[in-house]
Length: 105
Image (cartoon, rainbow, N blue to C red; front, side, top):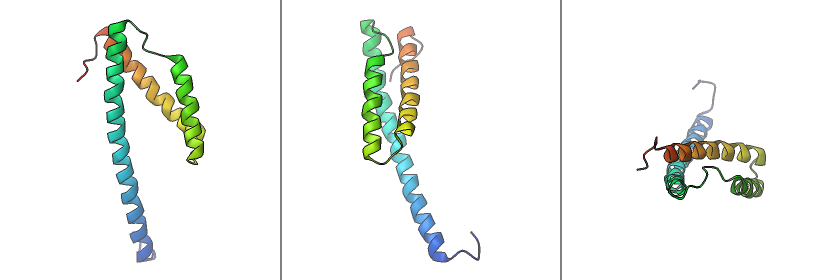
């Protein structure tokens, strides 16, 4: 970095960033697993003629996630935005599955 920054600070920063990178990798893998299951839900909904969206479940999930976030000292508003982003993508997938535009692997 710079000759004026102590080596121990650079080493600590590198270590922290490695941990962040590991967490990011885990998040990507968890999201991949989550989407495998939501795609199965999309297939089931399509086969049963159910709508892609379930506003009541979404409401319950938002409340549950906000509570988990608060317990974990994470901003509940951020967790809600994050879940809303995921749910929108899931609904999009469900709609594509129902229309035959998306193949589930």
